Image 1 (cartoon, rainbow over the protein chains, first blue to last red):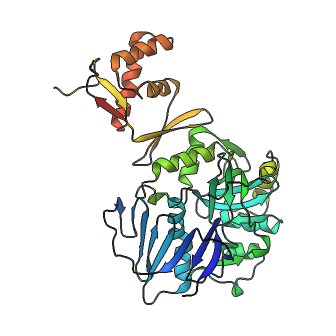
Image 2: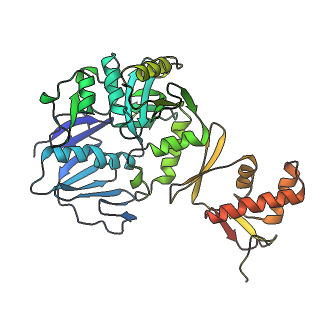
Image 3: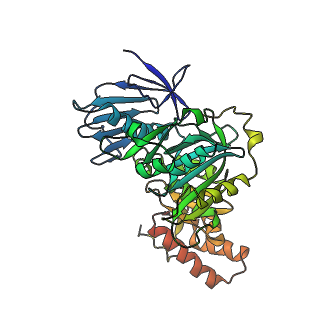
Length: 315
Length: 101
């Protein structure tokens, strides 16, 4: 069977399924995506519910009418498709929950947020759903920054425990209103899922293709008070921030990963400042909040001197 | 052997191995590896947590703390019991058999 070679989240992945949103890669693969028979259930799962089952090294995602995905040992994703499933749906869940599980199995820290590359290093934006993580990536892309990730920003540590953000893939998924704000006509854009007003903006020309040392993390909160204040988050709250904004934290228990995951969160918390910014729900992100953030991350001390030596990054 | 109670001075306690500790910005915190819960600790709590890495009797624990912190035996005992009860409630504390020998 023909195999496509891609790069995603710093990994070299071979896939039987074509992904137009991913960049091509070469060299030995870190993981593979194949079709195959996936069991209805795992033997002896630590955790199971209607959507997934998990145990150390193994994750089963069960999506009725779409597919079952079996993610094993951080190295392989097996797809067992339902007869009427569509490629774009398969790709959406594969790049989401299935790849998320694979990343957890590989012992990296996937955060639910976007990331851009700046002169000072990588800047990550996390926050609740609808707080503008993707839109911020789009706003800063328009301002000339390279984007590292849209929905999932993977933090990996090198041998010296320095944190790096790995390039995800060159697409930003935004809702109709955000696409308009970014002056993108949605008629010609692929929808992320049929019937959903969310569109994939391809951004190959302004995508950071190499890992970037982590400079800072911003938590975007919605509220009417203390708008415009950038506040440092420290100690226990900082640790909580890394745990709460982990991508798909509900699968960590089943994978038996809490112990290691806390260590990753501790390392991340000790490698970069976390700052919290309040934005008004009715205020366009592209204006004051973006100005404020840009001013703040540009004032950080640079990690540029580290970025020339990437030995060990991406492991 | 009768069940040991925390109120008994000879009861030997030890912290569970089902938690990991982390240090962020000098703040010590503990996380249970099964539930993914986390707990903060103050200075005294943190010292108690260090001391019960090894099984230790409640009376030994109080003696050590009285020597280290400027606090009277009674006040110390109250504080220690409060923390131990809390740890026990959160299943972060193991009550072990008396240390022999």
